[in-house]
Amino acid sequence: MNRLQALFFPETTVHPTIFAELLLVCDSLRFYQLPPQAEAGPATPELSQTGLSTGYNPIDFTEEETTGFTRLIKDLKGHEDEFYGGYLASLSMGRQDQDEASVWALISSMSKGHQKEQAEAAEKEKTWQAMLLLKLAEMLAREEAEIAKGLSAIAKSENDLLAVLKGEDDDAEELDFSLGAIAGINRPAFDFERLTRAWARIFIQDKQAAEAVVLATSRPESPLLLADIYETRTGLPPRQVINLKLPDLSDIDQQELLKMREGIQPALRPLRERLAELMGRQQTGVAITEATLADFKKIESQLNGALSPLTQNSPRQKTLTIYGYEMTGLKELCAVASRSKTAPQSPEEHPGPKFLAVLSPPLTDKD
Image 1: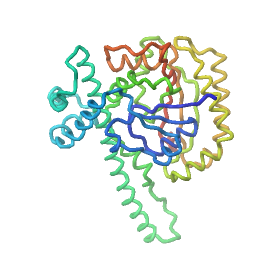
Image 2: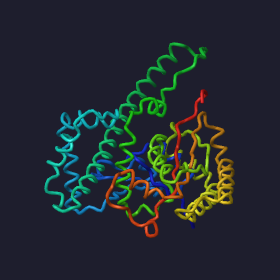
Image 3: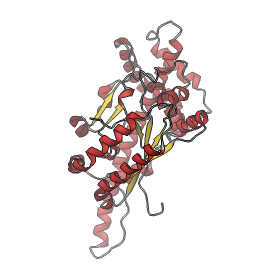
């Protein structure tokens, strides 16, 4: 049986709603879970317990190196004035005007003794830097989620008070202060090119990457770097093969999401198997034929039909667009994006995914 397994990027923390929406189309969703894992924890415990989502550490570090990285993360929390004030500001706002060498000097001093005195030491230090950047982005995202949750609770109380003051006969429109809406409004302006480069460095070392059929992201800006590299190398833009309408599940309870997903499995399961089979047989370096594209479009129509009962009852909709990167494969593109001097494993041995799915924000009346 062909399984449509997706690998989430470039973030290492995923909102439960994003998981649920992607799992309408995918069989399972994996994501990178860097140490200390106890701190990170599963973003969606209900989905993790069902095996639908799995976090794992893709870096093959020794126990000593893993311990060193965990200690480094804890040490950074004690240097917030020196580190957060510099590099996190650059990460969130995309600033390039600070002396990053001094920031990484702090990292090097903390991690001294955990890197081998060999030629590959510089590459390994860059891997540590990439892991740190992803971990810090995770911390920032979790802080943002807590703030958004608090704002949502305050806004709900204000709406309840306004409802009492207006009276039952007043049909004035209420503002949307749902957690999903607030999270969308207050998303931090991450420098996603930098975050994508960091994730790419980790990805090319991931020995389990070949298990993923497709990369998936909820940030439309994240794939731009890979798309630019792909077009530069091939002379062609990534090819759109699937475009789906999905319901916005922002305000639905996790248990309800699982019931909803299970209820439409009979219609979706054979379509996912067919889609995974089509993606899996696409060879790297071979253009998608018109016949194959017609097969993709047929599945697109069938999936949209199967999902229509959910989308029709959803006040807002999202789009999931899948692009083909079949001429090079995404591991090769990530090697270029990460500026790594170490080539990824050969495509024959570890081909990795050749497709990338982008889950766009909810459509509004203005769109």
